[in-house]
Structure formats: C-alpha cells, structure tokens
Image (cartoon, rainbow, N blue to C red):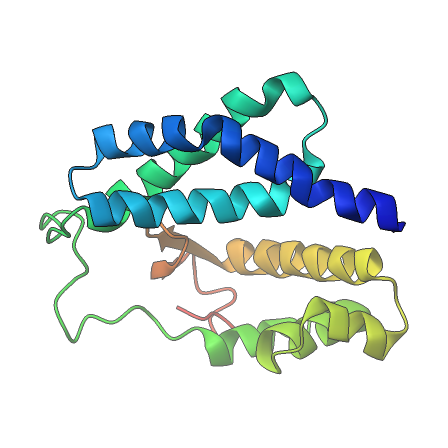
Length: 191
C-alpha cells in the first residue's frame, strides 16, 4: 500500500464522520431511550464504518450504507435485549432420562464400509478434531480438496446410515430418535 492511499483513508472517514455524525446520533437516540446505550451503539457503528469504509465503492451510497449499518446494530441490540422465555412443552426437550441416542460407537462401525480416503477424512475431522485446513495439510490436499472430501464422506456415511435407520431430528439438526427399518442390519445399526 502506498503512502498516499493510506493517508487518504482517515480523511475519508473524518469526512463521513463530520457529515453524518450528528444525524446518526439522532437516529440512534430516537430509537433507544437510554442515551448511554445509544452512544455505545453509535461507537460500535463508527467502528464498523471505520473498518469497512475502504471497501465501499460508490461514494454516493455512503448515507444509505451508513444507516443500514446503524439499523443492523439496532436489530442486534434488540435481539440481545429480548427476554428469554421458556420453550412451550411441545418443542421443549424431553424430560431428563430421555437422552437422545448415543450414536458415536455405531457410527464408527459404519465408517468401515466407506472407502479408505473417506473414512480417514471423517476420522480425522469428526473424531480427532482436525480442522479442514489441518486435514488438507496432513494429506497434502488443497483446502477446497479437503472440504470436498469431507463433504463427500459425510454424504456417503449418511446414505449408509439412512439405509439402516430412520432418524428424527430437532430444529438444529441433532438426532433425537432413531428407528431401524428392519433386522437386516441389526448388528451394525446404531438404533
């Protein structure tokens, strides 16, 4: 980065700050009654603006972009302030003692039916905790190659599991129940 472009960035921010500072402060204070909280949000907005202003390509879009950043900060603040409420009984987790099935040991048995490279990718990432970047480095793959291998291996494992059992998932994708289709895969079946 040359010295001139580095020197221009703070001036651009200062110009935006001078032009929109009071207007942005009023915008936030009209929506949040506590002035200290509004000022805290204002500071977080200015921090984001300072970080991302160099990425803005169209100078005529500064105002809409700036107020969009402020609206997102308000929405995030309102979400954090929303009181938590207990889940209704129909979606609340089941009572203690009704834990979801522990499929870990059974899933390990299903890994044996996968091709070696898929088995190794899942073992290293899912069971030994390697990141996909670490997997790529260890196996001499590109990051996208490692991601593809893990994704393909997960799909193959899921196919194998779904041939044996019907799974029920919660909203987050966690298994809450598993039911075998029949007895043909009972020794390997995780249910």
